[in-house]
Length: 121
Ligand SMILES: [Zn+2]
Image (cartoon, rainbow, N blue to C red; front, side, top):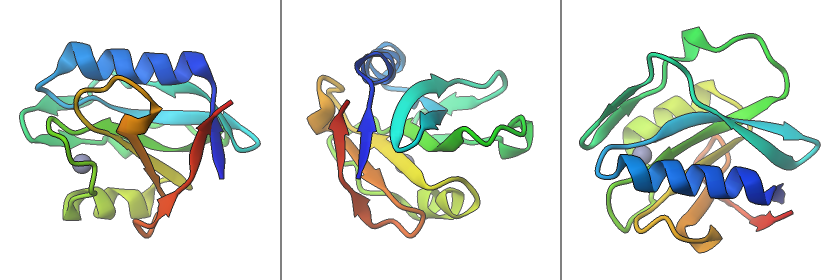
């Protein structure tokens, strides 16, 4: 089970809302199993219906535990592309669905695409 700090949660919801209908993508920093920070990389690609995580731009940083991105609709089921990018990244992957209001709009997945419980820290 993961926890997420309120500031990190509010940040990812706010960025998702402001970029809608474009997708927001970023990386997650954590201490133990608590997500503390969202990192948005320069050069990340945003667009309608697609996003591209540029993993090669990621600095070597062992506090980064996974990815986050938003979906422009009310589904946060991972796409095949999502599962592909999950496999190369860290231990937790969050998808945020419209309308990006509360933690209920988040679903967290492990690298295999299985849901993982996430709660506010
Ligand atoms: Zn996706």
